[in-house]
Length: 230
Length: 160
Image 1 (spheres, chains in turn brown, green):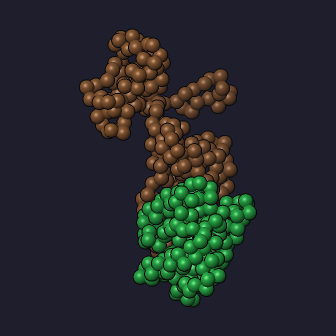
Image 2 (cartoon, chains in turn red, orange):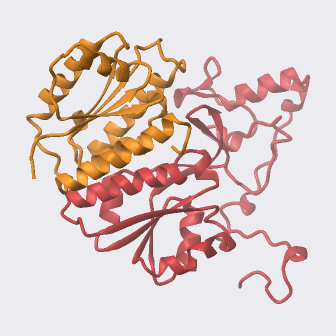
Image 3 (cartoon, chains in turn green, cyan):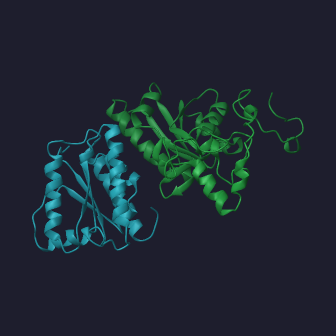
């Protein structure tokens, strides 16, 4: 899932300065699961923002809340359609994709982010989320026994650990596991340590930060006459 | 409009609420500006319940749960403690004194402690004065009545 956390209230208050009717829009998908922008958090941020605005002498600003199932898909944004006309700004509690989807859909309404989108990751334990995937577009997890060195090694090393791996931890932080220790341990438990002896081919970054924003196009799924936007 | 601070007490049914009852039975004197809301457990109290209290203009909020280790639902009071901490952080961001909110732990047998807690919160709120978020006495009392209704629904297993 996409993991995010909330922005501080003063930052949000300053962003929406100059607006008199604000709709706080939560998202029922990833950010609900990571407890950052679901229905409950939308209520919390809406309430906090109202109080903050009142203390700043802007009691007359209307702040209302609603949560839609998914902000990153136009079909789910439909339910906001008529309502948005009543507001001059949207505070999106979706991830960066959600914020941009709302901005594209409502060209005449200001859209602001209420969250800081962090990464793609998993729930490690209750209340703790960990980054697992960099979305590089060229997955090599099979080669690394299910542990991604691009995301989880601080140096993105592809052919083994650096010299600063100590007792299974990374030099960056004692809280950070050395990805290469994890890869080695897993290879060992699978009886495939020998596979680590070969030098890895360089990563093909043309699928990642190359050529601007990426698209995945499935021609077989495109509706005739409504292919990918230019 | 009175300008006396109003304190809202979010009380667990199994301890603080019974302690408040005992304080009454014992004819203990404590400030009359406290309004008691009964919850099935402090673990049932959400962060937005606490924020709603402040938004309605309450001047101080106390959350009173069972002694640590003594929660009827094992760890509801420990969850409440963390939520109170988080709401304190949010209050600080908003610009409201975080000390207007506090968590206390007591048992159902501690009527005198309940009275003390109310006095303690009053002493704490007095120098801070009435909340800058208070609109009017009517708005505040209506808001509290609405919250009491919601809390009773929670007791009966209704909506949160």
